[in-house]
Length: 270
Length: 365
Image (tube, rainbow over all chains, first blue to last red; front, side, top):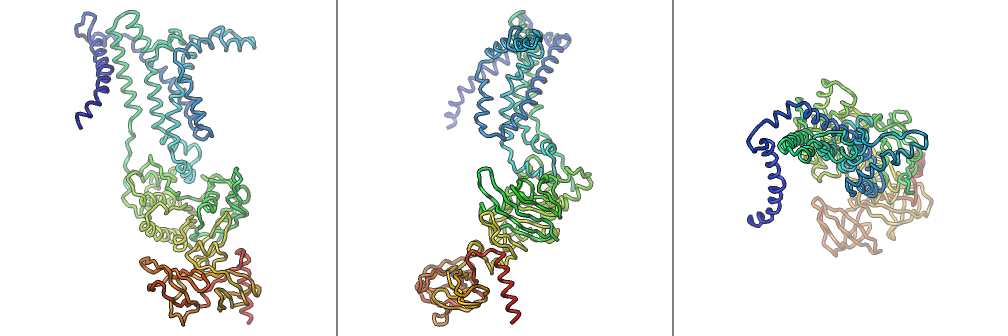
């Protein structure tokens, strides 16, 4: 019995070892060595002493925060009203549909829409405005990133709100809570697990976005993701690239821990 | 003093279903009321209209003399104990009970003693720091009651609040609810489909069917004088036979004439006669007013339930402390007061008017 179980574990173990544990070990190895394969801490010293890396880190955080925040602000009400709608399945399908399209294709579509000869500028020209430079701006980058991430926020929040017993909302009103108080003290805490998984699904990948920064942000937006690509592909300094990678992994773990933290309950004495 | 008045309340849903048809009722303060009826009778809809969760299609709701038909649920001095408790799963017992007070921005040094008192009232002392998921159904029920009464509402609504509990616990909670209501002196409106529950707890019962109030009154009156065969069948077991009123105080059914205590009907009017199974005494065939043959018999612990058939093929249900032999001919004896005569299609208003009239006639004599 036990052997049988082990047998079925083999593909999974192989996967984990080959594609998760080994790569992480490799990255760690590169980050602690120099180009002549000798052990050194100089990559880390460089990372934390050189202001550009810290600035890139802050930049990544800032953009990831903006993208996550905007997505949340748009997705929460959308998910809430979705739970009140008829034909929920159809609406959900319409929200999921864009995620089936390749990210690269969507990025190119946006280049077409936002470019100087794009749809938006053609429209603006009707009113005699423009052409306005939209593509390759911070705004375009955040706008497109938010657009792409919205479905991944709506789905977990929708599921979390759907699971809340509607009688609990009525109980809150029955006890005198206004709509806002009901949201703050009942709806929000009960839907938080959905918000947390949505934030995790968006904030963490957004830290290392690099394709969008290039195609839509026009390389004006530099994040840790862009930096890693730069070091591995352009300057071929794998050791520094790996160091940034390790820092990124540590940041992701910290974000994970913060967002899935359980609130401690205060005990009362009666 | 009247605390709640419903005037001409109707509720029609978008799909055309009429849940309530012209409901008028008055709730006095400090009493225990039950809304009793089968599912779909509209009893929960009445409760939700009083609580403010549902808007009536027409009619008015008055609370303490003020029209609250359009007032938000959150602004009504009414609290509800929900069917499946609807406790806040993310809060512990203390926070659940304190919720209403915190919303009202009461200071902590007022909240704590109030919560302690409410938990004591429902016998949950020492449970303040428990999680809701750690509690049994009965305990959750008590938390739900504490959460409502801590706000000192003038009216407490209970929506099928005991139906999820097992039988023993339900009996205990019936006693406790009644005791809590007496102690607090506030009005309870209890919705239930369980006639035993309604009879044992209430000062007043409204029996509902098809979105209409069939009968209202105290439990004894409703049990003893059902106005129509729906009430007679729904409240307790009963033998219902069609008969004919010969004149006041004499009725004919099962091919026999009997003295009875009812009057005020037209001579020879067709009526229905109700006799409760526990009012039938089993006697020797020659002493009985009716002779029947026992067909089946069930032992129910505290009594036997006997089904018997008379010479006219009428089926009789008898509750008796002693069993009979199956196939045995026995006599059934009952007093004139045990016969309850109902006119066909008589509303409660007509019923009350008739009762008043023939009782007045009686006094003149």
